[in-house]
Image 1 (cartoon, helix red, strand yellow):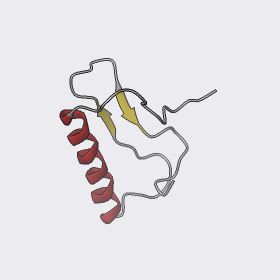
Image 2 (spheres, helix red, strand yellow):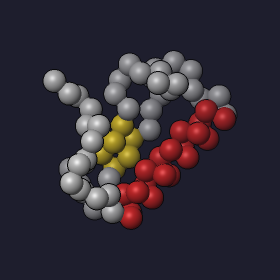
Image 3 (cartoon, helix red, strand yellow):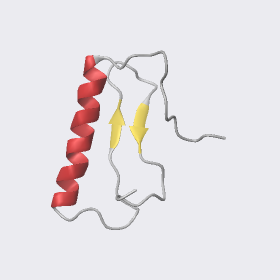
Image 4 (cartoon, one colour):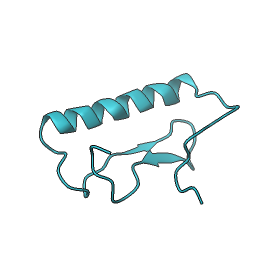
Length: 66
């Protein structure tokens, strides 16, 4: 059973969603650069633009380096 979607074959990511993913990655890098990357209790969540029922977050229990 897969808990995390790893592939979106057959569907393209629109420009707004791609930019949101880039921004989320930048937020993670900024947090790491300021030392907010210890432990497993920190996270960022991204609401997918234009899709009220979809969001991205890292599964609980993963360290920032994973």
